[in-house]
Length: 219
Length: 229
Image 1 (cartoon, rainbow over the protein chains, first blue to last red):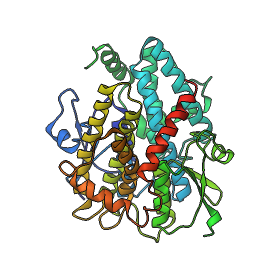
Image 2: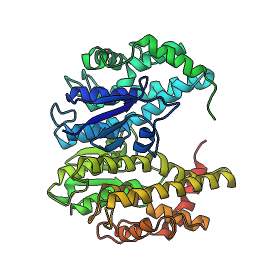
Image 3: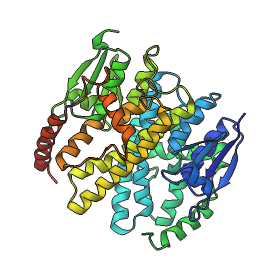
């Protein structure tokens, strides 16, 4: 079996997504930590378009963009399937994964915002999450039903990561009072061993966010 | 499968709507095309896509599927036997999906924003972005086509559909601005590919004419001016 390498960045939920998927499939891999302020030759070679993590390298072939990597992992290691078999159900799963691209944009605005912008971002994020809860998750325990699948993986940042950001910002969005089912889902996800054992400690993340948010903006 | 079992809600000018149409044509699937009118959304559309209220929506046996590329993957999976749309090799599939995401998330938004750019400087910056993107896509074409005529090789595939659906609007934009964004020096491969793609049997009947899009752009601008800010 060809070698598998993952170039990642420890605070980034995009990297965490890939770690969980590889672990769920039982794939052995080498993890390489990237310093995004000093990008390695390898990263620039393997992801010339975006120069970002995560990048999966299988054999000598690189794959970039976390959602693309997730589909690659699903297809290459079919054991423990993380997408439904039925084409309609798969289309629904992919629809919600795609919806998450917009949710991530709202999360980023929340992460980077302050003052009025932060309030606006919090409101938009809440609206986005209400639709996700109502029409995407519904009354299911996980998006994948009884166990997590690619959809759950793609929304993973809504648990541990958002909680740390909310703490640093002093603004809460995902609460039992406003989003009961989604809040419960996030708690359940964070308790799963594959997630619990493969996320940074909360205080380490908060220290990182605080430092990152106080850094002068890059031009 | 009876024609009425497969419906597609869309509009002739939308590049996103073109994608499932090409996919259905590749698979020789008959379908009913339900054209939406600019300025109003049908009840069926609102019911079938309550989250986004956008076209295209494929309705198969009464069940709606939304998001153009999700629909294309669905079509590929459901109507198989039939020429394959996604490549068979997982790494080639990843490459195709990577570039489709690039097109939808980076390249097309820049192209679309040219029309509403606030001044000449902003417009030029966006056009440069679109041009640079095309150079990247020329590289992708060399890599994916492996010497053949399409991103999918001998046959048109997922990335041909994802990118080719924007060609009509690219040509309209070139015409409206008096520029050439795809040309013989920087993107010779793509120029040739664009001709092959637009004249392909699965594409030519749904490929919009440049003139018609230029006219439609004016109608669209007028319509948008009437919307509340």
